[in-house]
Length: 441
RNA sequence: GCGGCCAUAGCUCAGUUGGUUAGAGCACAAGAUUGUGAUUCUUGGGGUCGCGGGUUCGAGUCCCGUUGGCCGCCCCA
Image (cartoon, rainbow, N blue to C red; front, side):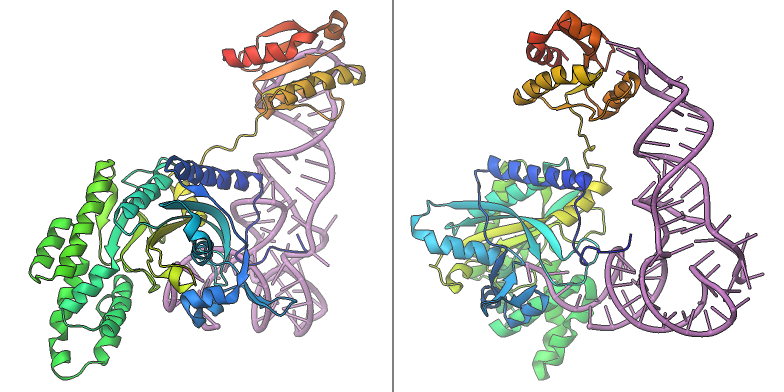
């Protein structure tokens, strides 16, 4: 069709698409509610500086940003974290700890659309503020697992890769690197999965003399660290260094793994230090949810960001959070055949003889609707045969038949569309009879 | 921001070396059938062949541009 199209990377949600999206949202909300998280929402449009402060000036290239009519530099929200930090920071003194909040919202990023990545997408965000200990990680990782398991996905479908930026910094420090070097190395580590050994080339080119000579050894240690997949191997590796900060991190690792395992979710967790997450504001544990079999990008990601609330002008408040998107989740559900069938069936379909009967039918139709039943009927006068066909196709369980014969007797015929049985009930008992008939099924 | 592939009905697609009025299946609607749902049959609506330009006697078909989609790269909060 000629005319207007939706903008690139934006989606129309036709009823069937909408119902799929609702299924995803509903599952997330159910999980969050079971975990005692409270739902909030916030403006779609925010001051541009909110994002620049958090992520740096370069972020603007990937934002839907513009100057509003009042001359304000604004941006459509690309994520929830700065907003929720602002909200929590503003009222931190009055909020009962731990603060467990979640939201389901739409976000906008000015990027080229790709598989699993659009310009407008929805995310579930969950965050815990005010808890510095690994108890917050346990709670959030368990919630993340439930946000996926709630669809029927199992440990064979996805896993949570757990890593730790602090552990990396302490480890790189133990290898003799300062903070600036460690940051550069983490960037290389982030790329390693895709680029292989070449990921370290840039860092290597900044070295000379002894430091260059010893670098292959260090790379070996670093890539070895990335390949660790069990807590035992991690303990073994770290023991050699005898450093208190490394050992302290290990205590937290044990607590997280023990907690998640005690919840029966141990099989979902993989130790995987190759996960470091792109942006640098994470301060401790980081984790991502991955499709186990497939080629999909990360399903969800999160971690601890203890400095961000303060950086955005709030109090010093520790925080952990994660986000999970609807696009990749939807693709995964599709691949696994876990998309629910689209059903719009009413409970009752009214079959109406003609105009005189229609008035009587309307009275009952509305009484049934007001009583909470889903009721449909044809707008136009149709042959009975057509109406029964329509009733059947609608998926209704019952047909109510308003014919001249029935009304003359003061009754309505209830036809069970499944077993094709029929019975007549008095007009004044229609609601009760429908309730009883539906309950009997 | 860079590169590759693609675009014909609501959907899936066919359309010959460029040649008359662009087709099929599915879906949708009506009828056969004025008190009971299947199947079947008949019929119908729906297309500026994504858009714009060019080549040609003639373009869905060839060329250029553009928009959109898909897939990589960059990035991924």
